Image (tube, rainbow, N blue to C red; front, side, top):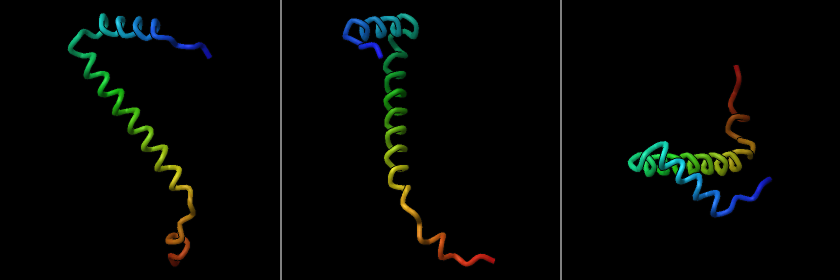
Length: 62
């Protein structure tokens, strides 16, 4: 996997600024941060959901 240095990050940010404009870049950053946060929350909640649930096993079937 290639290493990403500060020069590459600056180039990507300049290209994003040129493509989306100065008004949309902060909005895109917030959306990206929110998506990453939701992804991490989903991963952490799935790790706790791996435990077997006793409630479903005790329900009568009929």
